[in-house]
Image (cartoon, rainbow, N blue to C red):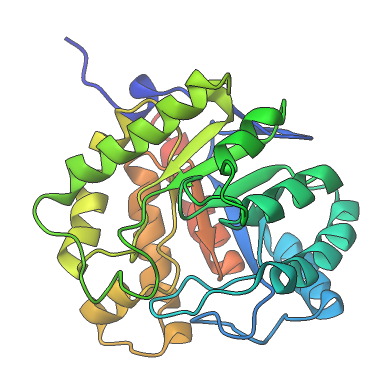
Length: 296
């Protein structure tokens, strides 16, 4: 029997989104646009529309092919942001970024924000809660929003507990099957609501309620998540687990470790990497591509 690889498990020609079909035959680099005052690595640097747009334009110059816009920090211990405040942060940036002509992802767990951004033309919903959180009135959740949209892409991420408690009481036991089973259930729920599988990407949630060892177990055994049959997004950028193994306690000093982790994730089949340091990651991916081109 032929060896099963990431390619045979899921050829993933495209990720279908609102305006774009994103080719996944090669790794895609998603650049992070945090419109927040308190994100763990770059909070406050791009928290107005003009600065955020300039940052987005620089990420594209550096080689990003997707932009991920977020208006609420989900770092460990981060307090929740009121709905209107998140809308006031994200919508002005989205309106400007729509003119850039690239796929735009919205990093939010609030169904109201999802709906407002999709109504404006956003391409992807990237939800750390995997569409579990309800509307403020308690009626329905993000599943309904995504299912009601005919074309948007969605990334379902695994998070244990919530930001205020996830690292105080991290997961126990073998996390890989637990994470894979959760992502399978959430994807199955979407598909039961008529969402085409080609719209769905999964993320195992590095740093979201897992120990250092558990995070690296997910990387080492990434094939078990890929076996679900969905493209994988990996988000190792500047995470504290990298600081734990390198001794670099300042997030901005974890660039080399972030690039290494993302290349390992790509080598093991990840199709999208979500990063702060786009130019360095793109350069590393180019080296990876050049090497693989000689293996064909």
